[in-house]
Image (cartoon, rainbow, N blue to C red):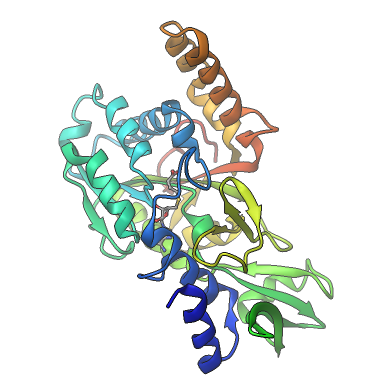
Length: 355
Ligand code: SAH
């Protein structure tokens, strides 16, 4: 048995799968899922993320969270949480950078939301000095002040896709054609979750719906609204998504999302409006959606790069300069990636972000 055979057997019994069900199988099937079974990150993996590019990323996120904690009166104890921590690199850099903030480490309880057993193992090695608690989902995070970060977490959540047809929608589904996986369309249905998209779409337009994003953002926001704290959500995407943004990556190169099921990373662009609506209805304020490059510049990435550069030469110096450019330049990650901050309605936004 492999994932393809499992999917074919499932489609034979249940009929075509929604794209969300297909993504969930590919990414998190306990036996064959992409994240469940491997470490996909870094130069030897399929893709590279900001914390894997440079230590500066996690350090600046750490100082941003610590400053917000100071601004909110140093609540203790508090939850320091990361959603989808990957290899644990961001959290390790964050914790190292905040060691000098008086009281921050004594007050924090470290909680990691991670679905993958393989990545939990890596995180436990990287973060062994900090006794992390792991969670399958957000609901079990403690009811106390929450300072959280999620980098490239929301883009990995399964989405459904719908094609506009008149005033209804046809769902894009994964079925079988001549024994191979293929995309097809379901019957026209009304979709109340997309009623706000009737006004800005036309016949034939495709929109994406990430049903998991709102409950997760709601649960984070409820804690922040009730107990204080903040969440920094960093991902590619924009205010409102339009069109097919599904992307499959294997060995740093794009591939067909229906090929190599379970062996390629599958992501979609984040529809930040969904997150903001969920945050607001849970009583939380949200910041302006801010390009990653702007956010990191405001937090002082160039000064940090200069300080690190002083001790480097040759290839190490070249790599540092390239990493700074990659994280901040508008033609690299600087503009594609956005930062959203959630914070109590009575507080100011975290450093680097504006209301
Ligand atoms: N934040 C890391 C890793 C990003 S990859 C970095 O920037 O390097 C996405 C991460 O989210 C992985 O750790 C993956 O296992 C985790 N993940 C994906 N879907 C998840 C889900 N539904 N619940 C919990 N964790 C999930």
